[in-house]
Amino acid sequence: MKVAVVMGSISDLEICKKAIRILEKFGVEVETRVISAHRTPFKAIEFAQNAEENGIEVIIAVAGKAAHLGGIIAGVTTLPVIGLPVKSSTMDGLDSLLSVVQMPKGVPVATVAIDGGENAGILAVQILSLKYIELKDKLKEYKIELAREVEEKDSEVLQMEN
Image 1 (cartoon, rainbow, N blue to C red):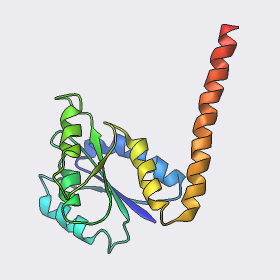
Image 2 (tube, rainbow, N blue to C red; image 1 turned 45 degrees about the horizontal axis):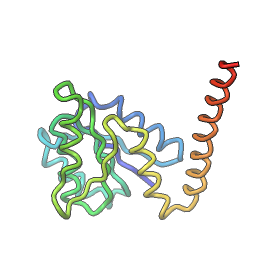
Image 3 (cartoon, rainbow, N blue to C red; image 1 turned 30 degrees about the vertical axis):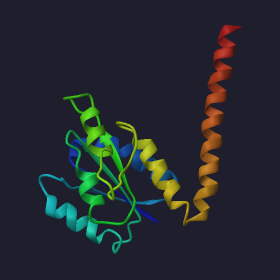
């Protein structure tokens, strides 16, 4: 099981790391690339056209501002593409979000929140869990751990009140 995390610029690396950490936590192999939809469009198309042949099953496209990376990739592959919009200085990331989410009919890009690297990783794992049953159990454990963390914080708050 393999996920590609493709960023439009090396400046997106910190957001990518959030997704990569989640994928690695679940034992998913990660291929990380820097490919620009605008500066290296032919490379983006070649990457997307060959992704499945190269063992990639889900692609996370991380980009800011115009954020067309997910769209160009989704336009030439049938693999699931998850768009991860990055906060930009121009419109606080709203420009990125709208660029990722407003896709034409027939070219979907699943989209997570601005800078939502963790959710991009989790969504990729959820997609893979349809094929890899062992991931379902790990996801269930992950959800239990999330709930446990909230319950611990609740207990801490209650103790502070007393």
